[in-house]
Length: 164
Image 1 (tube, rainbow, N blue to C red):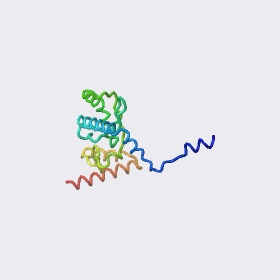
Image 2 (image 1 turned 60 degrees about the vertical axis):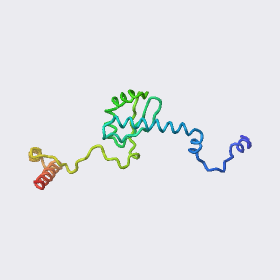
Image 3 (image 1 turned 90 degrees about the vertical axis):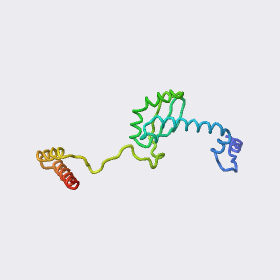
Image 4 (image 1 turned 30 degrees about the horizontal axis):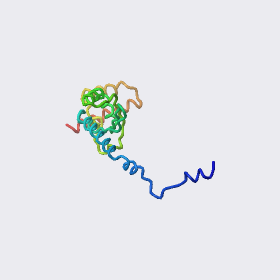
């Protein structure tokens, strides 16, 4: 290639690069309309979901598909169950959507409480369950499984005694 080609395309501006500002300068009204559309859809989605799932956000709208961002896999699974109903309600409100996709975006949701509480320590084995584990322990041959069952029974008998 000739030297003229490189000289023609090798010029640089002295201004700092700011593609966002250039984009905003071209059509700020379109940006505002798009943001309002996203917010309206997000508000409608949150109104039509149970309280535990109202943390989802509209991540993207592309033609007849909306992408919803959720904080965890538990939220995503529950939302997948409600997708047909939610899609029908959005269509009733004149949104021309045919598909809802769900993405897990935990970074967007710092500070959101988990969907369910995890019980720690295995609390909840009643007397009947403890008796069944004790019987199992007696029937097992000596080994790692028998010692694990013995520790489980001992731990839960101690918790039961502490709570009484």
